[in-house]
Length: 230
Image (tube, rainbow, N blue to C red):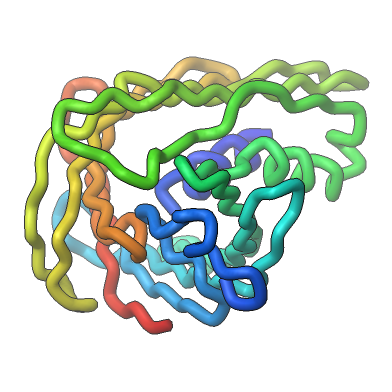
């Protein structure tokens, strides 16, 4: 369960051909074209590389009048020498793009017989395809309830989401014009944990950099884009 909630958080940091996303004005703050590949590195607060991730858009389709891109992720913890694979959907209705976290978490739980009697509810993180400084973004919540020999309720709440700045930043992958978003994330498993985030998002790319802070606003982790190709 702890790993599932952790993967949910990772999926949040980590989000067109035959029907074209652009036909629905879906040129938002995520890469959505099939074949797009992104590589990122994870740094600790001492600037040591502790992990890496690979994201690839593997499918585009249209469903219910919405454009959907399927993103496959591969996250490697270099300290534990462990790699976790998963996938999620980016769903665009023309005005905004949502990360379908609920579907991803539910699919992850169904893979385990231990969590077969489980339910997932809440609302997905949403990003308007056009954002400006001063804008407040909707909250997102994911609640997980497991029943059986071990009953456990857990969840993630993402709130206080604000567009705070526009900045140009240079990384290994290149130079990007970004909007900057800050938000707070509460996770509850056996105990509650609060973290704060600052993320840089580029149009048509997604998150190119993120900073993670503890509740006392001490830097814990940085994620940066190292490669981007379409």
